[in-house]
Image 1: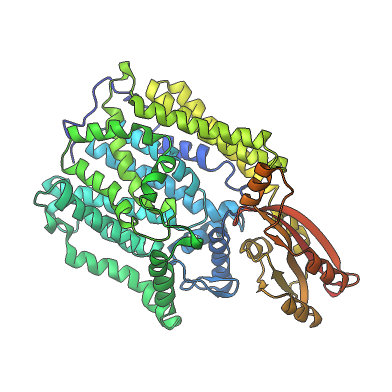
Image 2 (image 1 turned 90 degrees about the horizontal axis):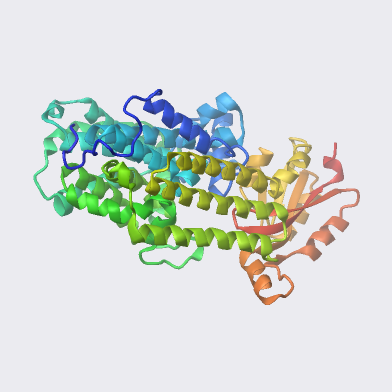
Length: 574
């Protein structure tokens, strides 16, 4: 595939030197290591999905199964198994810890950068390829999800491979007309693997992208024969069926009924956690997810219109497809549209590579307004952290400071690119890495379950673990044990009388973020969302000789401050 003459960069374009000391893949792996490894092993597992993914893999290993994920001793039908398989490899290499649980996302984000670089080099130029890969690695949403223990990055990798293959087959030279070319294999293998990563979204994005390209953006006949649909569909189905049929047989169809019915269809029709469904939600989140590179959007659009061809329009369709798919989806989470981001960064790369370096890369009034607003957001967060009385824990001040520092680092990166200052670009990347390290270490000190872990490790393995009021999946991961989650205090008392209980964790009190803000605004005492002090104290008093440990901390899954009480009965004490 040759570079389009309209999109080829000028000789003075701001790119890396033509003769580099290191190959691109090594530079990209160094950049990925700098941005994604520091702090990744320190940050506690963030939301409810991370500990579920992390421990489900461990439970699959303990049960010696490759088909069905389990969490806390029960089936987990949320996602197909590819991510669990990948995590399993890292557990074998690095042991059972947060870094091993997240390493598949780090590797996947780097592989996406490599695919983006190779694709950009083939259809545009080495300079465009470099800007596209760097843009992907340094955007805010990739920095977040590239270090999370979830299935999104493997799925994004598969979609990126699929779209790269479609670019070759649909817009490449006639040499790709031969049957079973490498692009054909990459297309259908990545579609099958993508379904095993996160279900039908890995197919929906490429299908809608191709339809948009053919009937909305490019509107010219396409060489459909190159896709080899007949054999390709059979290959993709064979990949899915090799896992899907045994999994459905073993679970008597529950994997499809729950996995598709509950976690795909139901999420599309019911708002997440009772949130209000906002129109154009995803278009608004792009201004944070694509920080700082969204500042160049007008410039990208202008350059795209000047270089409107089969390749650039397919990239536009790639970027647009996830936004249209999730436009009416009830569960609104900003990372859902991430499969389209590589398409945007390839367009960005061609735009930046075509800009003459002697004048910089002017992003115009839009870019400066955007950079100013993001700077104000960061400064406001710093002011609230260090002057507002609603933050009462010093380590949380550093968490907010690190988050604000990351925003400022990315804004600085965008300004450095706009001005053409390479040293400033490097300093901004180093600052971002430092902020991520600070974020992880400060947040870890406030995790209540990590504080309780040494005590929980002392509980004999043949004893039961109970939880009441605080039933977060992080209990399962950090204790590496099964828990019985109870909703009624009567059930806790009943279980304690049977003598099989090794420990019980109870929620004493909880404050949400809104509680803190109300207190700060009104200058009043803090009112708790949940206050179970009397019940917890009564239970403690009814167990003479029991070991009682109280901890405070920040519950990441609910963005709330909690006080927990751990009770270890006399019979469970070593």
